[in-house]
Length: 112
Length: 111
Image 1 (spheres, rainbow over the protein chains, first blue to last red):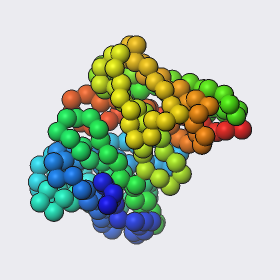
Image 2: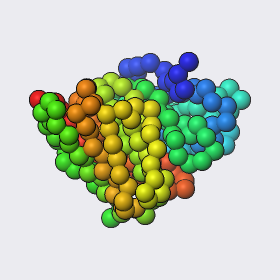
Image 3: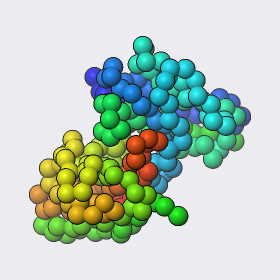
Image 4: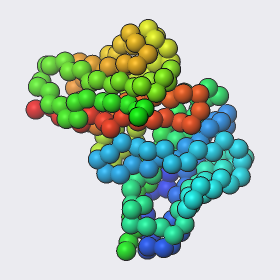
């Protein structure tokens, strides 16, 4: 089992719809969870971080964490063509702030 | 503005050559990292450093070397022992919270 897994893409949604990106992780002691957006040919950009169970909202983005199920998700409301990118889930596999493990990413395409 | 600078943006390596990728940060972050990304793949950790003059191997350190003589700098050398070096190389740094900040990356190609 891979340490961090994401739903396989590519994921296509129409403009204005909700895009749902999922991530599961294997290490139960994981403490910190991140979502990065990576445009083609560019470096990843941190868009959300979440540390406790529940929902965290930031603009059109909502991160959801369920440590019991070892599951973290990212919802993008009112999806825009500019949201088209690869989304990387990242998990701290130890209690320290380093040693983040990245998932393989999910490619999202928002269709105008 | 604070950030991470990677250079060069594109690099070409001949067979048997060593090449060095530069990474400089002015964020005052203690930890720095090097990742490799292959097309359609996730990020794989090469080396990381938490303090000056100390660094640890990541998951794919073979064929690579690093140094950390200054807090701001963490160069990566791709040696001739790395048989398949063509990839996108990303340097990152982190403070105590808020995840990683990435540089713009170096695209290395073997010619």
